[in-house]
Each structure stands twice: as structure tokens, then as C-alpha cells.
Length: 248
Image 1 (cartoon, rainbow, N blue to C red):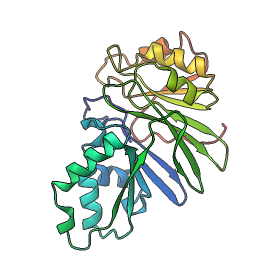
Image 2: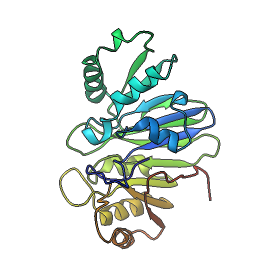
Image 3: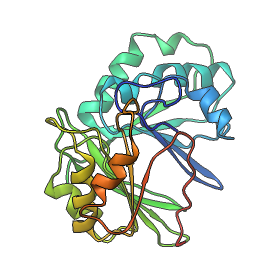
Image 4: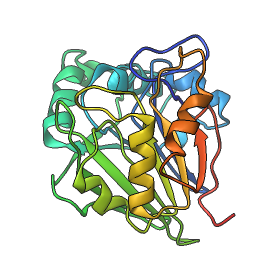
């Protein structure tokens, strides 16, 4: 749904994703215009099963309030679960409380689900997906996701925002696909070259880099940098890119 680092462009929204099966849809983080962008992706926001918030930084959460309000205005009645670490969802709940949603007539129920900050902790088990997490090395509590598609056994790990850390390698080892941030050098983040090194250590088949500098005049160089250590398939995330969670 979005591929940019914290500074978005007209073409690339901030990094966030949708996890979708026939009867389950989870939004992973939330950009600024969620309802029209979901519609653009062919997804009815009424179909959302839940929202997963990796951490409480503005570029990952700033669209959540308007998403919740818009779904109410569009007539949602089904409860909605929001998953995240306690440090994150407590702030999300406090932010939403400022808008007094209890005064919105017929407002649906929001259930905040706290996930344990432990490598391998379960976020959810559903008919289609098994999702476990690990705490990353970022400025604030941040969780990566390991997603098993039960119909195919395909495993995807999403790093969220992090600098290289052992917890991510533990979580991602054995995955088919690693979706890893590639913001660049600096505390709390990862360079494309480091993302390639991590992909190689984890033994994944494919690396997709996201949360990168979309203003860089030569983004293809990121693929070259990652390829110095990783010999598998490498791509840069693009907004509205679709990825089949199945062997190619």
C-alpha cells in the first residue's frame, strides 16, 4: 500500500501493507488516506478483520483515526481488533479517546489486543494465517511479523522499522520472503546492503526492500547494494504491489 520512508512523495505513500485472504483482511500500519487507497486496491474497508500497528511513530499510525471514523460513517457495525505492543496500542487508544468516539451514535466496538514483547509471541491464529512477532531494535517498541499462509505454507517476515538485530534473524530464518526496511544509515534503521546481508543470513528466497528513500535519484542502486551479499531475488517495494504468498 505504501513504500516510502517517513517522508512520503506524491507517488509513494508511507510504508504500510495489506494482508489478504478471501475472507480475511488485515491492514499493517496505516497511511494518511486509508479508505480511498484501500478502494484503489480493490478492498472494501468494511471487510477489514483487524489492524496491526507495528509501532507508534506518525508515519505508521497517522491515518488510523480517520480510518476508524470513516468506517463508522460508512456504517460499519462489526467490532474491529487493533493489535500491537502495549506501549503502542495504549497510545492509539489514548489518541482515539481525544475524539470522544463514545459520542458517535452507533459506533462499533474497538478491541485493543496487546501482544507480548517476546520472540515468537503469537499475534493471531486464524483460518488463513498464523502470525508471530519479535521485538526490533528501533527508537521505541517495534514488532516484526512472521506470517505463515496456512493454505500454502509460504512464510513471509516483515521487519517493520529496525536496525540489524538477532531477533529479526531468529524470526525470519526459514522464511520464503523477507520484506525488510532499507531506510539507510543511522540509528534504528537498516541500509540496503545490510538488508541483503540479513536476507543471506536468514536463507530466504526473496528480498523486497521497503521504507526507503523514494527521492533518491538512483533507487536501482539499492538493489545492487543488497546484491553484494544476497544472491536471491531482490526487488524494491512499490505502492500497490501485489505479492502472492505461494511458491512461484
